[in-house]
Image (cartoon, rainbow, N blue to C red):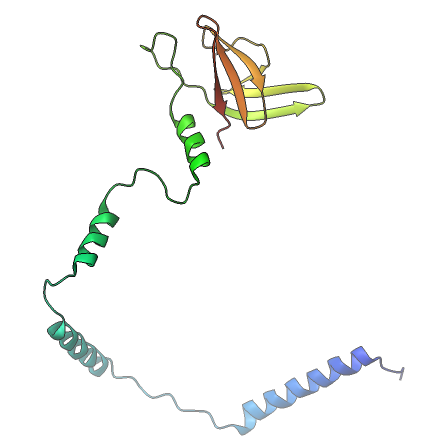
Length: 168
């Protein structure tokens, strides 16, 4: 038989200890007998406990703090408190559609994809691929800049530029 390494000796000793404990637990230790649970008795005790608790609870007496807390929790929140302010402002800019020159018609752009291949950048706006300088499908708008997290769109008539953030 070949000589055992220290690692093999440790593994074998752990195995022997586990087998010895399993044999002790299975054969020597007496098994506890399961008591039959009377469901009717348990439910009667539970009903008695509930009645006792409700009897001692004060009826309709809430503190001013509790009333205030509940009213604030039910009120509509203006913004998510877990957003930091800068991220929230950027998110609100994305939510507001870009306005056309006259303001009568609202035009929204959805920047949903960015592709960078060697020296060529492409943006997916409203489901169509564009390169920088391409006129957009919406008449009167041109794509001026493409970045990973935003695009710059220019209204040709009013020469106004605005940014559209990447929608994830």
